[in-house]
Amino acid sequence: MKVGFFHKVNTTPPRSGGSVHTYQVSQYLAQKGYELLALDNEQGAQFSQRFPRSWSGLKALIREADVLYFRIDGKAGWEMTSLIPGLIHSQKPIVWEINATLEELKVLPTPMRWRDQFGTILRSLSARRANAALCVSAPLVNYAEEMGIHTATLTPNGSDPTLFNSTLRDPSVFPGLEHHFRVVWAGSTSYSWHDFKTMLDCAAYLKT
Image 1 (cartoon, rainbow, N blue to C red):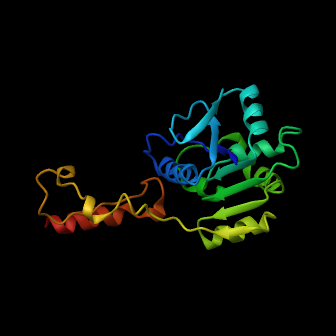
Image 2 (tube, rainbow, N blue to C red):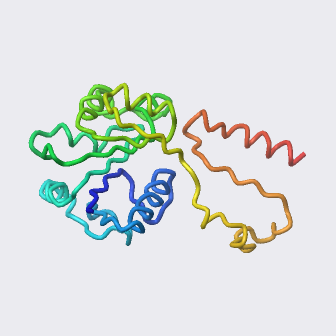
Image 3 (cartoon, rainbow, N blue to C red):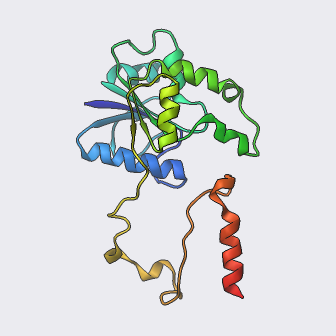
């Protein structure tokens, strides 16, 4: 099966939270035997075919794919292609992977793009074309259902056990700290609910 894989940030090399997530998902799908199609800005080896990042390339990718997979986050994105008349044929299955609502934008210091300002309406309209949704939390399952996606499945975020296997520990990652207690924080300082201040407070306390 050929999967048209649409996401906002390149998966390879994985850097930001979004790219790490798409890297893991795309790697898993490729290992399961799916042929992943992407636009040519994506360089990951797990993608079997790339199309020009142009209007003609987008149409060719959608035409070639058996199913379209859209990663949905806090900004309006590729899911809006469902609103373009004639671009996606009615028989083409569409799956959304929902990671965030558009409410996430309200806590960021950067100004909202025009399409994000109308994102709530546009996303709800494009959701009518989605056949199923994978949601990373129970509230997002409700979010999908409120937009009219009746086949919404809870698929919580997780970690890759092959990457975090204790037998693969490499002491050289933290030179000079091999026998010290170490804490690794994963998150974004842009989001208040990630509570980076607590990490700073803990570091200051431990230092004393």
